[in-house]
Length: 427
Image (cartoon, rainbow, N blue to C red; front, side, top):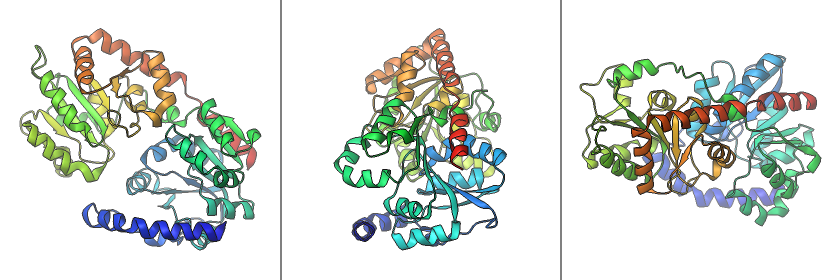
């Protein structure tokens, strides 16, 4: 199996290398820390035992916050190290944790690179956020007696059929997992169907409920309001948007501005991927709206002149500030089939939240929010305009939806405590 996986990885790397080169040249990605990807990792406190947490990208990094905080408090004898796969995930991890913990790129799963990483980290336990089990990593951990725990476990509607096609591989891999802490009963059943032992799968709910901030006070939001001259006008925030959505949002916004009482409506668009900031800026300009790039204000800590109709949130880590100022929020990557961005953040802040039909990455959250009328689903561009209009002209609908959504988030907290208890039992 080890030799086969190394061959498959080598073929995959050759096929994928043109894309890596393109992104390196044109998007500034994959430019650093290749030593870490090859397993050359350094720990800050090699005299301690180590808990290795792996979070693929930004969403998983954010979801790990309460868990990491509690591990540090309750198990100070362990050093926590954190890896991520994506550039944005690593940047977020460094922002949150680099001052206290070792943060690095997840090594390639070639057997010799992963062996090198294990030799340098010598982990007592590996916690994998949501899924992200790799064959060689699992085999090495199994041989060394290092328990692997899938935390906040989830297998999406899109991923599950793909894993089923290679069940012979997944079964061998998942049999090496010590424990799966799944978000829902449905996800738990999927892990079992792919090879996990039933007695090693436990349902804990989602850690993201615990990390969702519900007090409504966001550091830096007041400064953002001053920088964009935001006072009492209504603000529509479209957060975590993806390709194809911004044009629909801008079209709907143009129609909204023509409605009685909405002439002063403003829009903030925050794309999910930083490499798309310039593309979205061009779309806003093409639509004919005056706009400001928040990066220019943030870099110089300056205040914009006038009241730009559209604000482009072209920075990382500031989405929550925009959400805190919003009258109504649209959560992106949902009008096109990309699986969705995190709708817990705005609903937890008590904001009336809308999203499209493509939310397979947040299935359980969407189900409970819609069931309790804590969010609003739109089906297309026309419906986006219609339902956003209703929320902007009907304050009672907006307030009721926001209150219901925030209540749902609060009622579903508690996964961190269950997760810590399970980890403690294994250690």
